[in-house]
Length: 115
Ligand SMILES: [Zn+2]
Image (cartoon, rainbow, N blue to C red):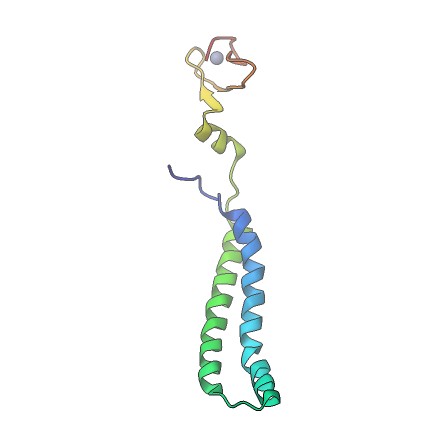
């Protein structure tokens, strides 16, 4: 079963700002961890930390921007597409129009024929 195009739009809208927020965090990480290490009197390879944090900043920022573009500019799903998938919306065999199959009635809303 393939989901209709635009199904993930809602999740992407939530993930995009979180990823951008994470990229800011990764960018500031080497500066903050250096202060913490200095205060604790420990030594650390700051260049290694800085390299890793720059990679993570790039990954999070690009994913955040990509998800933002996909989430806010992409297609949203028509509710009827889900109804067709679950069988709530069917083609009437009598009038060949789309009819909603509700639990309380099995008759077509257009021609009163049985679905
Ligand atoms: Zn009908």
